[in-house]
Length: 106
Image 1 (spheres, rainbow, N blue to C red):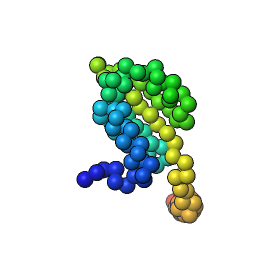
Image 2 (cartoon, rainbow, N blue to C red; image 1 turned 90 degrees about the vertical axis):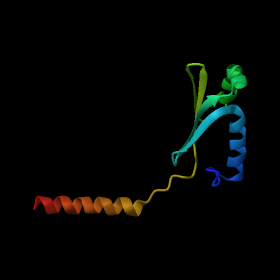
Image 3 (cartoon, one colour; image 1 turned 180 degrees about the horizontal axis):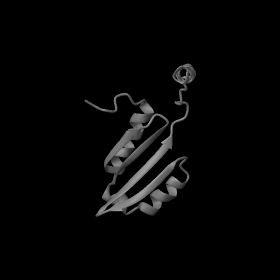
Image 4 (tube, rainbow, N blue to C red; image 1 turned 180 degrees about the vertical axis):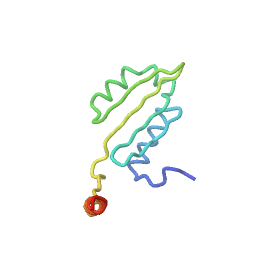
């Protein structure tokens, strides 16, 4: 079973690129941002400066890390439009907090 079956066609295209760039990687979906971390393929590890120049124009954050013989690349990007605020829940919890505080004080 493909764990990324929920990705859009653009997400699947990005994953195809990641499979070439990384020898192994993990995608973390943190609701408001995606974090992609993995070990660079050896042929791309030698092209680190070129990858850094490309990523400087990227609207997100990135970090290279050397662990033993492996070079890890971590990329994080904000996902726009996914911040859903449930204001009714927040208001309800606030009112319950005020009520229970007053009840405990009486």
